[in-house]
Amino acid sequence: MIDLTKVINESLDIYPGDPKVSLKQISSLSEGYNDYQLSINMHTGTHIDGINHMIEGPLISDIPL
Image 1: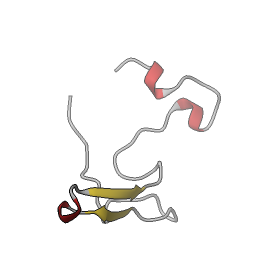
Image 2: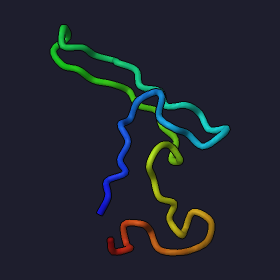
Image 3: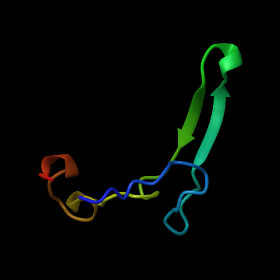
C-alpha cells in the first residue's frame, strides 16, 4: 500500500474550475481552543470517484480495499 494522502491547506490541488480550498480560523487558544472552518469540494486533493459518481453503482464504502 502507498499513502497518497495530501495535507489539507489552501494550496491543495483542485479540479479546474472548482472553488479553491478555504481554511479559516474561527477560534484560537486565547479563546480556549483552536478551531477552523473548512470549505472543500469533493474533487480536491487525493480522492477516488465512486462508480455512482457517473452511473448507478455501489458506494466506495461498500467496496473492499
